[in-house]
Image (cartoon, rainbow, N blue to C red; front, side, top):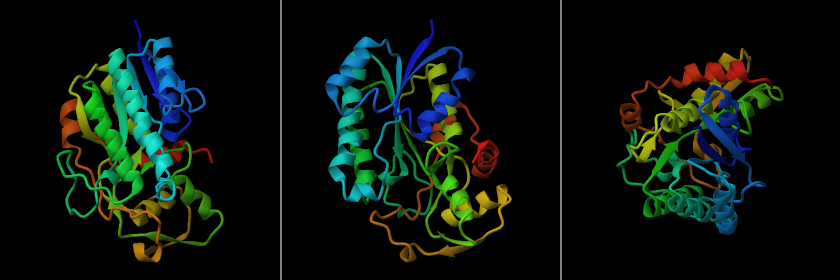
Length: 286
């Protein structure tokens, strides 16, 4: 009997990535639900959906991710990232469904100089990070069977993301300024999606909070330079300080994630971000 997997937020870049992998996982039966199919902020709708469909695992890709916009729309961000997650956690607990929740490096303030572990103190500096952390807390309070996966700098050939923005801008400009003093790790959604599906296919029961990104360290400037190099695009990329590019939400200056826990649990090797970027560029049709 196939394992039934619900993917919420199916029209986002991670949801679309999971859909692109479904043929590789023949033993999984997916339900891909967009916001139109399932609004997680409406508890009655969530309950009805779960009672109508036999679900074994839920991967929650539904989220309010507009980091700067969240500063002006805190209630909207909270509705999706906290109330929506709470609704999912409650029904997952009632129906004995395991939940995989995508969280973020924004739960940290970015003031460390070594990679963040799962045990480090959380201290978000903006609305987005705060609501994502509050969502984590709702899950931990209400559910036993969960995996919270904090990740960073997601990109892919799907949706809107830094890689696609850089390639688009290179067609319009001869030079681009990119912030060089924010340090983290790009994460290819295909790698993250495969990790989540491995958790499900191996019926992993080592529940808890985990960090996942690709290996290596980069600034946004490094990331941009690599995108153009891998794409064979000749453009002048100039490093700038964060102060030169002010944003409504403060970005962590350092948000590298320590992946020791997830590597040990799943017995995996994580590819370097540059290796995964090469694959993403090769798969990009735009």
